[in-house]
Image (tube, rainbow, N blue to C red; front, side, top):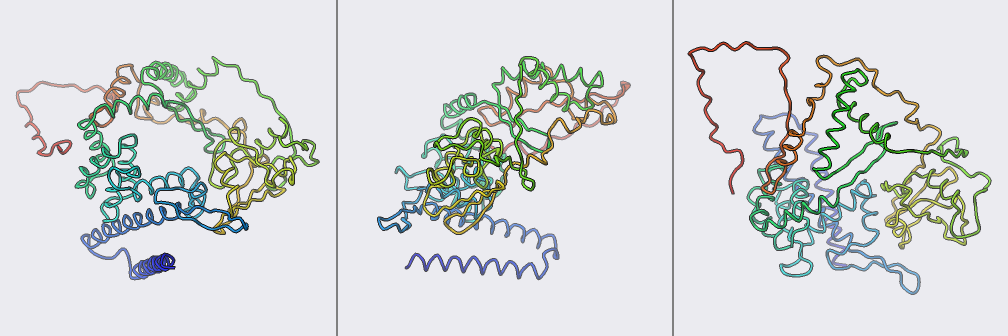
Length: 474
């Protein structure tokens, strides 16, 4: 009863605070002197930071609630120790905060690590409690706190606590980039092996990812070992410069994209198989109208599985984007009560497959392919299938190589001329070393016309050096 009363009091206080802010907006938000508006801006930032810290504490309480089904079939909530995260908690947070599944999991993880820091020397110690305290005082925002925590990801809890304590005086006046450099400098002083191990993990985690972006456009994100990337980039850049010189592409960035795909396709053979299916006239979902692919077995056949994966494209749980190829095919109505057919199968990643089976969750798949999820708090969310009727294939879209050439030298449209091996090496070797130095970016600037220099006896006065160092010493 006491806990419920405190929660109601907090909810009332938050609602009153929102009402007060709404009243403040009614009195005008743009009038005042520079000093007054600056002070107001700073106070609002501190208010947001404190509210985020309070949100972290509420999240810790929410995700520690674990639903349990009693012998009589009723479901009751059991509160675990702070730091415990129920399996379906990120999915509930996703619906409340309107976040994707990945963002919700990260938000829960950040909140638990900051606000559920246990006593020093215990198993529940995270070492990041200082970040939560600074946020609660209005001196640190969530983004900068996340940057510091990410830099300390693989460090022991005692090292994290030491670094956070050393950074405390800088939280109120330094941006994320400077805090990141300070963390790396401190780690290099405390234990250089931690940075070396981080570099080894980063090299082991190199890879290439792809996702659909704008209509007809895919986005690739790759990380590669520097020694491998140097040679590959040189080959791509050389071919791209040729494309710009002969007019195949107007822009150097477009030329590099085309050079990459051309070089890859020259080393591979791709075979495409096309299978036609009917599509729903409104949603564009692929259909098996006469259940020709349905089966009485638990596992769907290859053709039915391919149809469902093509219809969904990715995990159908709200906010999740795991590709369909990595998803389970879930029976919406459990088998054998529900058939193994396109009308009862949906793609769910393993986490959301398990989440859907938790007490209080309900799902429904409509004949038009829309998928509806009801969470234990009563929120209803719906996801749509891929619209195969209205999706424009990349081959149907013009490739923008016929655009008018930009003014000046086209290869310098992006401020980036030909990249030599030396320039690539400087960027790789000087970028983010163990001392936390800022990444080195080599920018080539070539004059467009000649200048004549005439020697004279007069010399211009020497520019005085700045009294401020580039980076404050520790």
